[in-house]
Length: 179
Image (cartoon, rainbow, N blue to C red; front, top):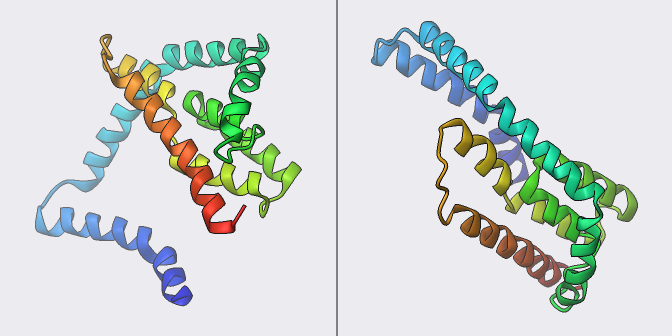
């Protein structure tokens, strides 16, 4: 089974890229190269358009961490999350994940360096990193780039999804590894 998965993981993306290219070129008769360059040009334009939203979000994250609000929030939530098997050490990464993927990645690396990849903290943090989303990043950057100002229930739904994913990460790891 491992050999099959290794084979698939090695060839899946190249086969997919070549398959789409061959299908578009020979079956749909599309100008693949010009379509690609037009899409790349639109991507660059979108990238330039989202820079102000990205700068504003990164500034807000820096203020949130530097003010001590992150530590304050973790100290309030730690007694509650410890009851369900979610260590307080994982909370800052879980909170940061909703704000910034890169910031959360750095915190995950610190947790793995400090506690190890086979520890309860390392496993929960790794599962949480893969199962949560950068909610506020999506709201600030993508919604801002397309001009959506009324996000309605999107923040609530995103935070609820992140919270559920963080809790279930702890539950699943604790069940699978018997902590």
